Figure 1 (cartoon, rainbow, N blue to C red):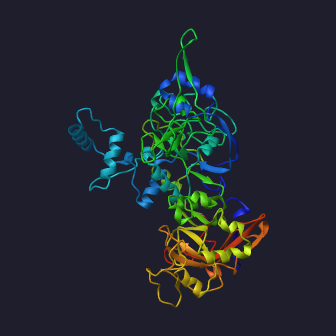
Figure 2: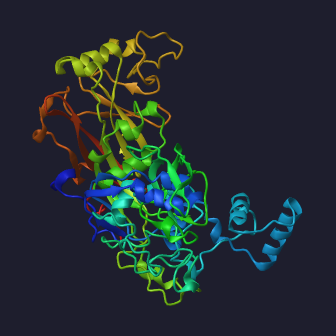
Figure 3: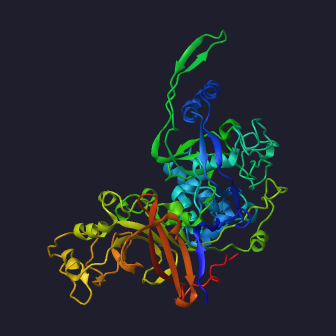
Length: 577
């Protein structure tokens, strides 16, 4: 049987009409941020919001690469699929609380905190975090609330969902482009404050105001066909709460009826990189706070009844798997933070999305109590399932530093002399591997040249066929990771040291070829070949080199399913919807 070549660069593996629930947004330039003069006028109308409003400035143009984004915010039924599959904590808004239980909780709260105590959604959330696993406590998603945006999810909850689904959060710039495209409009539909297009505190008709409703209830799609980007619920982005580029403080003067300055002050926005930016406004906000430019810093360990999220995906879907599974790993594992030390957009691999049966999901819905005639979600709406993937990502600069100044022929000799084995990439798999024998997880790959026995002994390695080294033995040169727990055979062939998230070497992979050498860019393989006969997945990575050339790093892994059977077969990787 012929091997199957699956190159990265042939075309994106997701298309807007191929993965339900995601809408394609073409790359381009969009205005990000608000004009200072317009902001000053808004502050004069609403001084209490001065610091938030000032943080929206200045306006700048940003280039955004093509990407995909959720047609709607993630709904209760979408999040339910994740909770049922993983056992994750259900949001507090799903709690089953009878009238009798509610009365008991209110009484206990008043006794503990005084007569002003209210068992509102925030109090319910605090109680739920402590008691949701107690005996007799249950939860459910009523059919009439299935299409409401999921709320009371923390930033970590959201990242975990995205990791499971092989997706990610949008950046602020992506979110803005999805909402306004090439225009500079205040809202996805234009500049007019239309109270029939957004779910906010004064929606018309009035009985729909200040409530969570089914997604897609309003005719408020952006030019790309993306709904609910003004009002309804705030949405997390992956952008830290930093000031926009070019921010300058400014003074706001307040004028009296005669046009003379009565008072003035300089707003002071909140900048805190431990916080993230929220977009979109909510059902409890005035429409002014639901503009595309509105940006709110928020602590990621918190949750709220007005806060949900929307998923996004890169044009290269393997990048999202790599990003999601390496997030939060200590910098020493990758010789730097993964988002900086790995060329995520250059990831290659295999990926399969499993999509639940929408007919089964639709059958569980019931008309919404406040809006029984809601039009329902758009055709592009879908419920996501888990992702299965094996991906490899090259390092951004594996042979930098001293190696960059060295001739190609001496780089490997330097590695041996200095016992420096650089991170050349990452391997991320949701499947176990039979070769090398590894559990599903995220690993860094360190390049180790072929070495003789005495060279291995010099760095404290456990040489194949010899006794394990004494951990207290003094060694001449200490490598960046301990090599005393895995046997290494003396050889002329280089290997990849497989390093886990605890920075321990847990495996080794033979590298094809006997040494590093540079090739012209167009001659370097970069992609994946499936070979069912060998039950193998052959991976080639293009690593940055010199003089418009690159290094080719090729190796083999053998992924298996939960029964230990090979999945090096194209049939397995067909989408599971």
